[in-house]
Amino acid sequence: MIPELGKYAGAVLSAYAVSFVFLGLIVWLSVKRARKIRAQLEEVEQRLKSQRSQ
Amino acid sequence: MASIWEYANPKKFIDTSNRVIPALWLLTSLCLAIGLIWGFFFTPDDYRQGSTVKIFYLHVPSALMAINAWFMMLVASLIWIVRRHHVSALAARAAAPVGMVMTLIALFTGAIWGQPMWGTWWAWDPRLTSFLILFLFYLGYIALWEAIENDDTAADLTAVLCLVGSVFAVLSRYAVNFWNQGLHQGASLSLDAEENVADVFWYPALMTMGGFILLFILLVLIRTQTEIRARRMRALLARERMQ
View 1 (cartoon, rainbow over the protein chains, first blue to last red):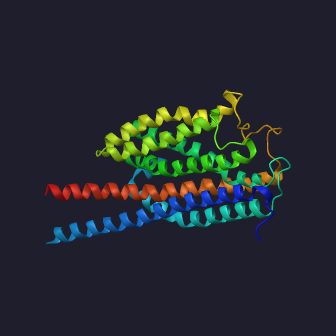
View 2: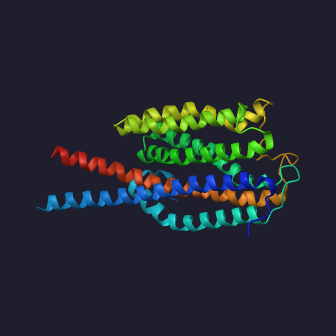
């Protein structure tokens, strides 16, 4: 499956591994924080709405 | 025709970006998957660099985005300075961690590529050094946003830092032209036919560059939405405390 990379296999594969780790990390962190803040904001808005209606 | 300034309205920005984000996920995944699979599995080795040429498909797009992310931040910061639109300041803030990660990928893949080709992981070469400084500017920019509690003051100060850092973003792009020395080769992205890479490497690289550009736009949209919501939440909580 993996093409013949010869003596540079270590360099090529580690470059891909490092890049995927960094890219995966920034995507995961961005999505995770987006969900967290969205949920927190909804909770705050809901709370203020119920306070106003009381 | 709708004016671009309509998107300075946070609600309009969130509504519009919500419509674009699903398509962007799809396009980004497609471009990255096609470009990387094509480049990794279906391109030959270079006659001088052997299989390390496959690092090209990650190194060049990430370096491209490392520099252009800063320019996007510069434009957004200038809009903030001139027109005081909060969304533009928050977009600049949102782009910084993405640009920093692109710079890190460019630095790491460059070092890994440089070791077998130049015999060293690092050299104080003009392009490498200016990229390292650009990375430090990203760090400083992010730290400054985190350090200042007042959003408007943070936006003002980071905008100034962004203007100063733009000098290094320009240097990173043109260092190989300014100083004809060092280990790094000339610009890979050039309109000069003699300097350009062969088509067999170029087309998959174009695909991955498209993928990196789309990924950057996607992440900036998601992160800007988050910053807008976080700002609204801070405002609501402050109002609640005042009551």
